[in-house]
Length: 118
Length: 118
Image (cartoon, rainbow over all chains, first blue to last red; front, side, top):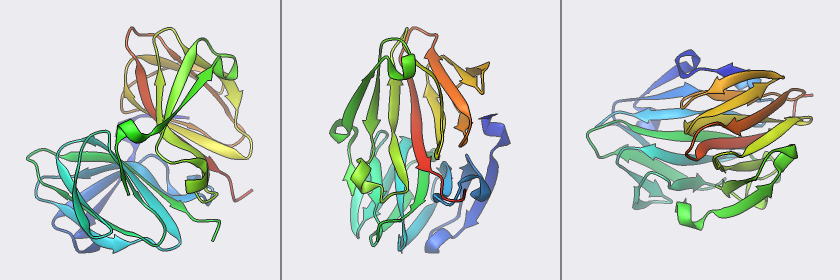
């Protein structure tokens, strides 16, 4: 099935994980379409001045693949620049956070997979 | 863990699924890092004139999220233009194919998730 970006459902999240402002996820697939493998797959958009607070993943793991904008992440508590082409892998049992430090939207792919081998 | 694009492992695939030429997957995660949820997560690159042939997914499902270039896909046998921002979802039991019809690389995100609910 081919789905155009205008047809993705949009999930706004306010002060997500204790972050600033409102961020958005444009969902590639809905939860019931992911056959139990994952619980989120989409394009995340963080407007200027907004962020997702630091949080842990337990029982699942997440990847961010950076497309556009200027961001910093926390990767197990350590701040790092996050640039287009970078991957942030928050493995099961680890923590992360992300913040837009530019003046344009930060856009990245986000996938949260469930963990099946522990 | 933050991983730079230069550190992604690269999988070249020749005449993949009966397609033309050589395509490349820059892996975000290695198979053993995906905890049984998925078997591929990466940035796919199809050079001009190259393609992936039509094939079915059984026991898993795949998404392509288009980033750059000019492509056509087959979606259950039907040819459709595939443009930046589009998602192609090849659900379990369905078929797809992709071909670069431009003069620059086609780049898209590819994730192959396993199916757990049937």
